[in-house]
Length: 231
Image 1 (cartoon, rainbow, N blue to C red):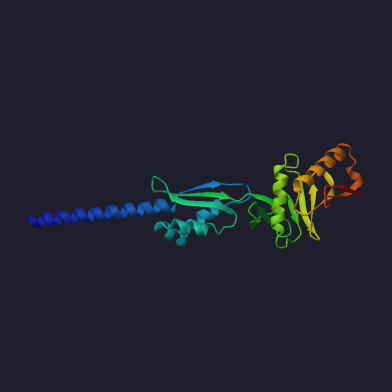
Image 2 (cartoon, rainbow, N blue to C red; image 1 turned 180 degrees about the vertical axis):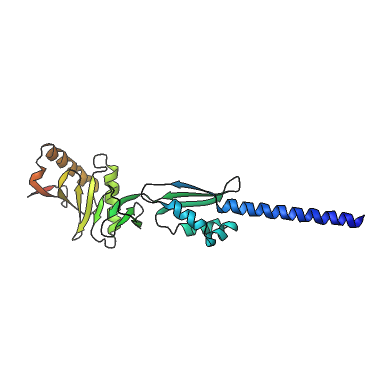
């Protein structure tokens, strides 16, 4: 009788072990092939890239051992991703939240994008977009100046979405505004609000009177002065 009981116990243990192993395998499968919640800014396509990576051996091994921070660290190496969060949901399924970076300018010389954090991301296609163009090769410290200028323009309701291009010449910042056929010599990145205030007055008066065609450049490099240079 005792032998029969022992046999039954062994059978039960074997079945339990098999079921538990199956449960673990199923869980691993759920973790490995979970949901990718993707916030696309329209400039990149990282969902397919991430999906391919998490199905690869290296990230699959990290996922199956619940080392999600290491998975995030690996995915964050993709420069066009701004934020990534890897976790298990209430059904023990893998969830990956991805947010792409949002470019604010196009670097023409290097065929790259620039975002508000100063991160430069290589552009992978030749699709035209309406982002402001940064012309020329940027030197050390010039990215910060670009970010400051674009930020101030973007917050100004009048000049918002009007920036066409930006470049540096002999240390001075030059702008081109849409529908305003002349160069704007901004100088440095200081007193931008005051410079834009003077530019706005000139823009509104001259553009409404169609006189802007007589000028080739506006200088805003002198304190509280706007100088218009004729063609």
